[in-house]
Length: 185
Image (cartoon, rainbow, N blue to C red; front, side, top):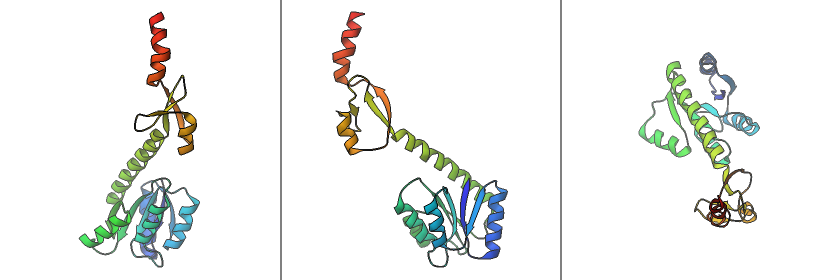
């Protein structure tokens, strides 16, 4: 995976990058949240491993910014030099952090967290793909919405954009077209 790592302390940054690379990942390192935000805008990152305390935009603020921008899901691992307390954990969860690690980062622990991140990102992509399918009647081209209501294609696409078609038969076309065809057989 391509990972964006944020660490402002040089020795900790070298160690973090080395661990991530030893786990087989492509890593880009930045030393502050503002630069990380710029890199995120350019795209391509689905996992961020960030120090909590950063100059300017800290790890929590960066996570909040990423959660409000939308787009593909980004798995966010927060690293802290301090013990993660119940209050800190609550703050991080409210900001949208997915997981926590305490410095110094244990390579095995980080590897397990990244394995979970890969699964979640894969499942997120699968859900997004499945949500893009639209049940459409093969005969009249009406589309079934989430409330099982069949509506004409023009109405549907005036409400939503950018999806793929799948085919089905609405109840009206089943009665009007399929039943007579079956009766002929």
